[in-house]
Image (cartoon, rainbow, N blue to C red; front, side):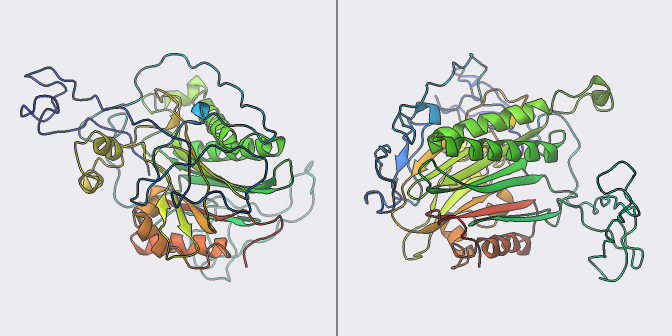
Length: 458
C-alpha cells in the first residue's frame, strides 16, 4: 500500500542549524524553506552489474548500446536517466525520436497533513478488515441472446469444504464459507515469466495488479515483459487504477518491442500510456462524485522490467522495486530502482541515514505516482547488461517490506527461481505472508537472459 507524503520534520535548519519547532515550514532565523529537498544527482543510463565486465556473448550483435558505468560498490547501481535523456538507438540503428515538449508544472514534491501521509483528511484505516463480500456467481441457463444461450453454467464448488455448491451470492450452501474474490489471489505464467498477487492478511481487498507477457524483437530474439502496480490506498478506486495502469503498460510494451522500438524508450512510453489510463479514471460522471465529493483521483505506482537476450531495462514511478538476483549466489545481488518516497528524499538530502529514514513512520509516503492529481509525471528508466544469468524480481512494498536489502531478497528467492519462476513467485508471496502479510503482495519473476520462445516453468 503506497501512501502520500507529509511535511518533513527536522530538528535543525539545514542552512544555519538553528533549532526548529515541530511543524515549521520556514526557518525563523534565516528563512530557509524547510520543504525544499535537493535535486537528485546527475543520472546515467547503462550499468554493468559487475561494474567492469563487457556485454555477454549472447548480447545481440550490431546494437550500439550505451557504455556501461560502474556501480556504487554497495550492491546498488549508480543513478539513472529518464529515457528521454538517453542518447540511445532503436534496434535498426536509427536515433530515437526526440520527446514531446513538457509544459512547465508545479514542483513534483508534495507535502500534506503532518499527522497522516494522505492527500486529504480521512479517518485512519483499521489494522484489520473482515473479508469483503465475494463476487456473485451466476447459475442456471445463460440469458437468451448470448452466444451460449440455453447452456447451463458450470457449478462452482466451495474452496473450503470442497463439497458444497456456491450460491448466487458467492457463499457456500453447505458450510456458508465466503468464496475468495477473483483478485484476492492471482497467478499467471506467460512463457518464462510468472507473477503472483495476494490480498495479504490485513486488507479487505487486493489493490495490486500485474501484467506479464512475452514477445519477439524484429530479429526474432525473445523479449520478456513484467509490470507490477500498487494502488494508492488513500485515493479513490486504487484497485481500478492499478489494473488500468498494468494493462496499459503491458499492452504498450508488447506492441512497441516487435516494431523495433529501443527497450528503454518502449518502457518510457509504456509508463506514459499507464499514466493516461489512470488519468482517464478521474473523468467520471458528476453524479458519481456526489456521493463522495472530497475523494481523491484514482492513483497507483508502477514498476516494470523488459528482459532480452543481452539487456535488462527497468522503469518505475513510486516505491515499488526491481531486484537483481544472480543464479550464482556467490556473486552479489543488487537493487535496481530508487524509491520516489519521503525516506529516499531524506537520505538524498543528507538529513537522515537510510536506516533512520526507513524506520520512520513516514518512510512510505510517496513523492511520485500515476494519477490525475500528480503534479508532474517523471518516468524513471535504466538499462543494465548483466554478465551472468540471474532472475529479475519485480515487486510491490508488500514483499520488500519483509526483504528490504538486496541480500535479504536474494536469501528469500529460491535457488531454482530462474528455472521455475512461478514456483519462485509463490515462495516469495508466502515469505511475505509468513512475515505478517500487512499489505497486498505482488511479485513477478523474469529470468535473464530471456530464454527462447516456448520455454516456461518446470
